[in-house]
Image 1 (cartoon, rainbow, N blue to C red):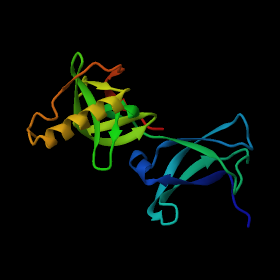
Image 2 (image 1 turned 180 degrees about the vertical axis):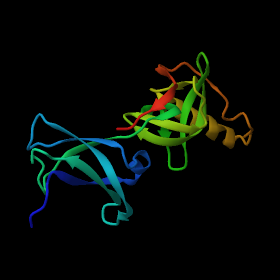
Image 3 (image 1 turned 90 degrees about the horizontal axis):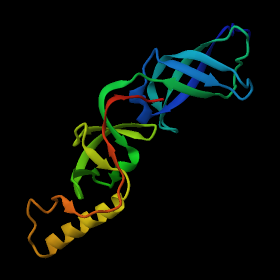
Image 4 (image 1 turned 30 degrees about the vertical axis):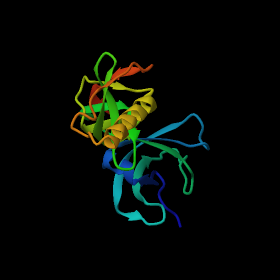
Length: 194
């Protein structure tokens, strides 16, 4: 079959977790091992309206100009879709999150040596950062290392309170300890995904 290859489609599978980030019109950069040193620019032209049952992914169609004929059918490529920023998003480092089956939490510094476990609702994750939809305000200090020690101490205190049947509203209060922790301020700004 003879076709015009001055414009080519590139079909990419996108996992469900990445779908909210992309939209038709997003810029795309592509590299190929068979064309070293060359970067091709294109755009996301179409998002298919169904998911693939075998891969649990959704196909998207990318459109590239191909005036030199370097792009040919059945080639493999590396693709980066440049999605738009999400302004005014509270983000934290991914390592600050303690994930369990029922909840996601982190530790917030209330005062010097005092930390409070905080349940949070998470949004998108990208480049080692996670958006926090609720449970945290911009400017609060979060623990980014030694969370295991803090989480263990928190669980010990909770178990002890249950054993003596003195479980009250203060059982999750700030902990007075001074672990070797690294703190990082929460950013309040644009969250960008590649």
